[in-house]
Length: 152
Image (cartoon, rainbow, N blue to C red; front, side, top):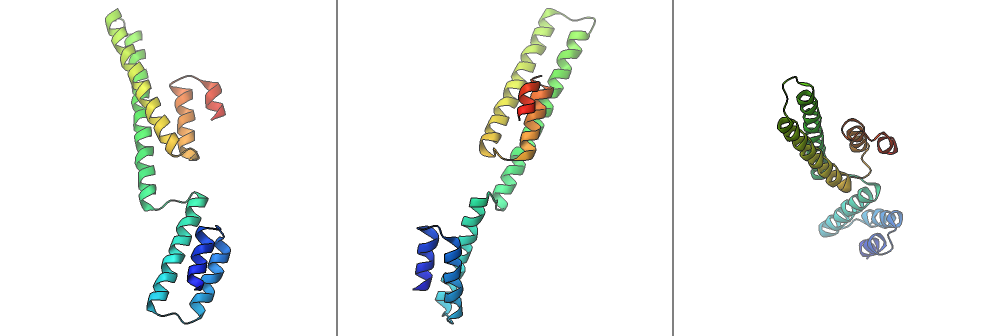
């Protein structure tokens, strides 16, 4: 009965401390195997809920964050490379309007792709400091928007 009450406190009233107190009382009453398993499951569920409230991540979420972070850094690097190529084509002595136009279109497409990737990743992880730093650097280096970069 105290396990059931603990689940009630945790899920309905969202009282984690009261739930853990009830679980400790239930574990002291020498529960049977099934009851010990229920206590274990409730404790694990309590940890999971606490981690979600605190913004914690499990392994899968961490791996996904790292993958998205690497994708954002990679697309950022590609946009910077495209900026470099644009300026190289602009400063070369034997340039044509078509070559400059092509280089500018490629630069615009790379900046658009990078902006889309950053928006998606920041939508998923809005409080991640490293991503926000990269987004600020992207705004400063590629978009030349110092005001937005300092606000980020």
